Image (cartoon, rainbow, N blue to C red; front, side, top):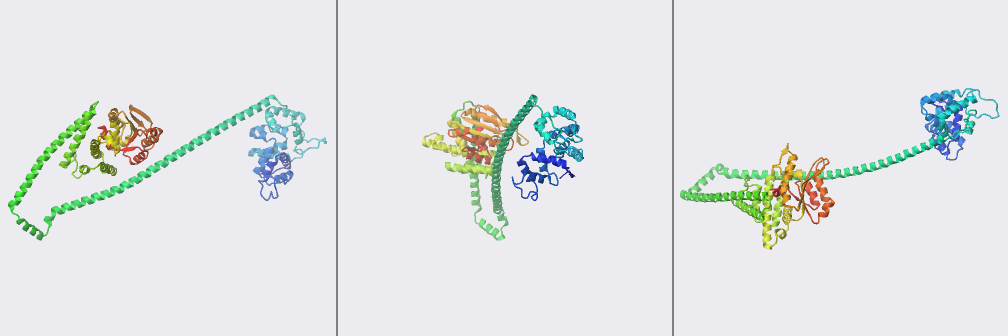
Length: 611
């Protein structure tokens, strides 16, 4: 066998053989299993004698890691040399030779992982080949001769005494005895070390320290397990949030695609209508000038048949009728302007009064109804409306005295027009106002016919009318407002301060202040105004008005706070007795809100309660 390509002397192999004889059967069998198949052919557990297995291991060409590990476990001096540094081993080499024997020390160094120590082991092994080198071979006790380099008993005793204090814990741990050392290395036996109380205390302290370290390791393992579980829980939560966000994103993309298709169709329809109208008007006005000569001739002959005087009389009669109508239009227009001025005054009085009279609301309804009747007669809407604009079309439809079910259809049409972008801002708010005023007139008529309060005569068909009925009946209800969504929707209607097209703290405060008169007038109404914010906080403006800041990172944090509130235990306990309304223009959020049983109101429709 070779170590680092150097042949191992027989004396060293004999020492290793003695060590392997003291090794455990299981360790010897496991090492045999590491040999190549051809080297362990026929070997089975317990089949080969130990000596045969030892011979097979020591006959290997090189010292394999498995054989090295087996020898290290069987070496009685390994625990001593393994803990000493190279410098310490070099310094104490002479004493270790006296105590352990040259062959035993060389055999121990040759199986060390440190290359310098193996080199020194090869040097000591080469010395064991000389005739006067001491080896691990047994010596005949009857022989009176002593090896030439056997140490003097007095020198050996001095060496043992010098090493005793330094290496007593290691020697005790190795379990050296005088008898065992005498059998292994005649002439260099170590006297049995007497047990001592300090050594026992050292062992006890070592065991206690190891137990403490084991306890700390178990605590660290338990903490690591808890941390891993917490991280796994966070991972699951993040995965759930990611899935929910992906679903909402997919819903938004699908809605956007639907809107794009509807917008394209609407654009195509409008362009077609415009082109058709332009073509019809061009044909109507230019055809007489572009007609053929025969057509012009026929027109000339036809006009000559009518007496000129009759034609003049007919034209003057028509002009007189136009003049009479213009005079009526002027009077109706003046009446409309006067009614509008009075309506503004009544609204201002109701807003500024601490105890507004109930008659003010009824008077406002009657004034608004009369104004709409006049506008229908005059064929005009509010200032700046086109004769064929959407508000005029809505007034024309409402002028047909539709039923409550038909009004609900008109209300749904206004909402669809808002989703498509056809109506927005002030025009959308006016459209909702027209429909809700018509609703109120129909409710009042039904209440008068049935002799019951309006809120009991006919169930509310829209969320806004349901909210108004709850406020008038002084029943408890909760209103959740998506703050930033409303700020963008009501920017022009409420004249909110924006900075670089973004609402700042001033806009949020202004909007919250506009809600104060509403909550003071209706103490049964609980309002939660949600805003996106990096830091979670709650501000109580009134007893029944709170401004909540979502905290966290990402988009739609206030939306998620509203959804979580609707799913919370508090809302679940109040759901049977308390109505809940959400003000938002976000379609994805509106779908989630309606799934919880709450009702959605558009910001442009809700703003009428703030006037």
